[in-house]
Image (cartoon, rainbow, N blue to C red; front, side):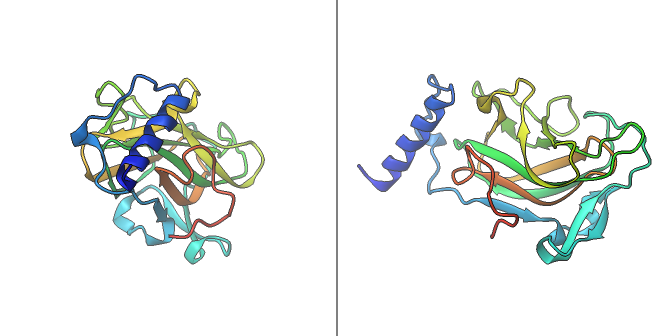
Length: 212
């Protein structure tokens, strides 16, 4: 079997183990090459990517920076309401399951806020039936729910049902996709965003910083 065939079979087996036994990728959906791990550092985001998010210093973050929202104790709402958010683009491949992880800093609780939640959406995302999902501006999203304990933690972006298979992200076409990360609670911050097709498909990063 060719290297490409081996990779394709591995993907199919992985999907089957996650409950997608009926999913079979068509020939035109198969990636041309092994997709890369997608790692985005907050320090690299332009100011234009931030809407009511601020850049804060943190010596443990890549480049010494993270982005977060001030905590006034007010309540925030999930999409489609446009609360404070960050938007940026990533390059993705079709026919590949991705898993999203965010290196979140849980802030101090205040008022209604536990400072530990983010919502995530993607342009051009689809489910296993090719139905559009997770589109920015809609009520379809993944939730990164951090712990109540303050500090840094790698947090998975999970579907409403909480099953691993519901947390995988697929894309209709290969190319650029827009990522929308929205604050679910005031005071939350993050310094890294990872969209993984392989290395972190089933488990979060073990290191505080994922190298590009």
